[in-house]
Length: 154
Image (tube, rainbow, N blue to C red; front, side, top):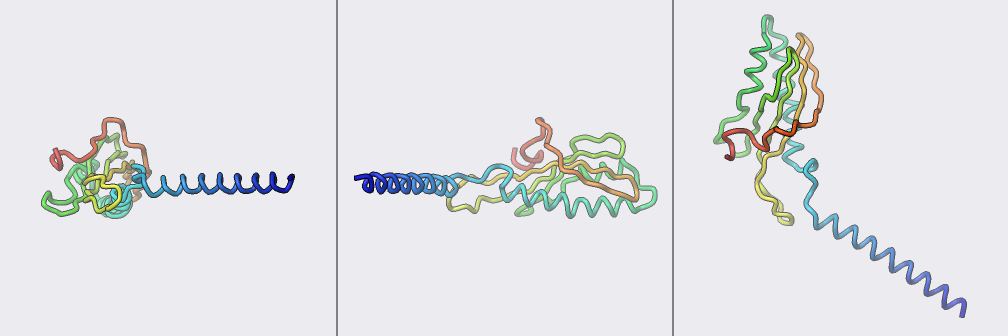
């Protein structure tokens, strides 16, 4: 009789583990990715850490380049409005040689599972441009940062 009780406990424990694993697995498949895990955010991050940073380094290497010229670059749309999957920049603030920007990447919804719709991926960076050196740091986007660049979806 004690053997039957032990077998029942093992069986119930096994079933409990199966239910927990099934629950976790179904949630992983059924829920859309968290906002920071979206492809658009990753693409915007790669753009901010790649093309934008490289252009800032080129500008910083030009003798006589001013903070005003760098701010103009950061405030200029990154790609024309007719581009299928555009990138964009928004200068959020400037204090001397420090520039806080939002980088955007437009993503079409290609998911067959979550159907989240088209959206703009977004990341924020603080660039410190002190010729000839340029540094970049990931920062949290300020609360008033637009979800998409002006004129691109309003």
